[in-house]
Image (tube, rainbow, N blue to C red; front, side, top):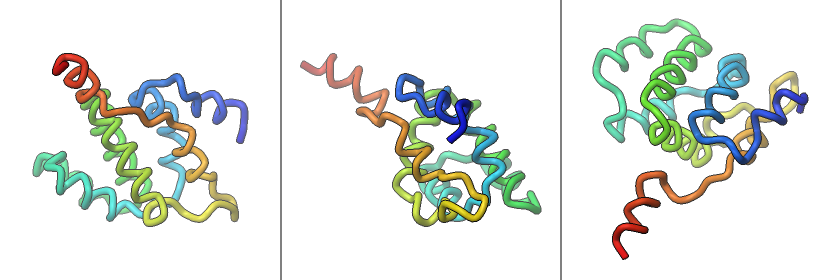
Length: 127
């Protein structure tokens, strides 16, 4: 990993910062978008026009960029859910490391998954 990639993999970052810093890394990789789109669609994450925009993109990198821009624009909770999906489906989504591909398996493992952001406040308030 380069110094910049190591800085972006800091466990002190919020999900939104982590995803924002990983934006270029993800968009230049050859991801399998279908499992991600399916998982986000099952969560009712996308509006119809969002899904149409993603599906109309011709190349994978454009689809990834649209997805990332949508997720990041929705804020911290959406970014956290998206990172959880990437982590859960990493073997379906990420290319194998090597052959010029960045090691996205290592990248996602650098994010410090905690309790869901919403449930942390709910747990402390529920006493």
